[in-house]
Amino acid sequence: MKLLALDIGATSTRAALLEGGALVWRAQAPTPRGPQAVVELAGELLGAAPAAGSALGVAMTGRVRAGRVTAMNTETLPGWQDFDLASALHAHTGLPTAVVNDARAAAWGEYASGAGQGTSEFAFVTVSTGVGAGFVLGGRLHLAANGLDAEVGFALAPPLLRRLYRLPQLGELSDLEREASGTALGGPLARALCDRAEAGEAAAEAIYGRSAALVAARLADFAVMLGIERVALGGSVGLRPGYLERVRAALAALPEMYRLEVVHAELGADAGLVGAGLWAQQHLGEKLSHAAS
Image (cartoon, rainbow, N blue to C red):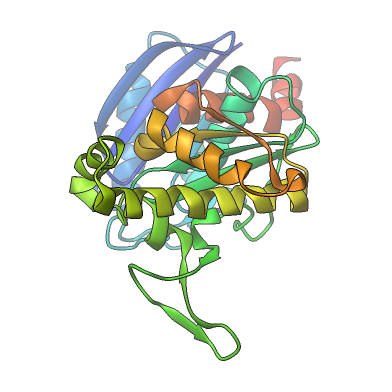
């Protein structure tokens, strides 16, 4: 079965054709501002595909509920407020369309074709500009009705870099994304900070190591709350060998019940595209079968 896929991010929109679960064609363009402009761009990109697809799978940053998208950051994605992306793309392309959050799509891609193979409880976590995640539980992609099923970046963490919230019993709290992401490590300067930490600079190591420890603590929660067996780290920070080493070291310091296997994601930037296509095939399977018959 041939499947078309889109991965819509704040910066770029990528299109792909999958055949037998493998990407056989790709195209990319900057993401325009506004939902309707994105729909029109998607039509242009998909129209250049070398073959037609049976369905369209879409990975989209933001909160996704029943094919409708609400941006978590309206500065980078203005106008995305409960926009019915699935219906708009279906009307524009004529294809059955399934939309899923980009991190959840990547989790499904890694589970089906990457680092999650052979597990039944699996998590994908990306540490990059932000922190995102997706869970596969009992061999099924976990998707909550409210669209907030794996927003690990918004889990609360001890503050150091930024303070946002205050509970009388606990004091100040921040969210994991603001404390441990590439943005927290310096944004455009994050790579340099990571390099300095891995070269042994103590001041850089204090920030870098803290990020890894905060992420490790959240992964430990996955082990005891969800029975996660394996976590694949992705993203520009998460894919660094030094970061993986520090996450593993932090987990090793905890009691055995908190430890789980942590590996690098295998599909890289293609995880979302692969996952979106395969998710559409699964999610729309019954409709596709009826159409074929």
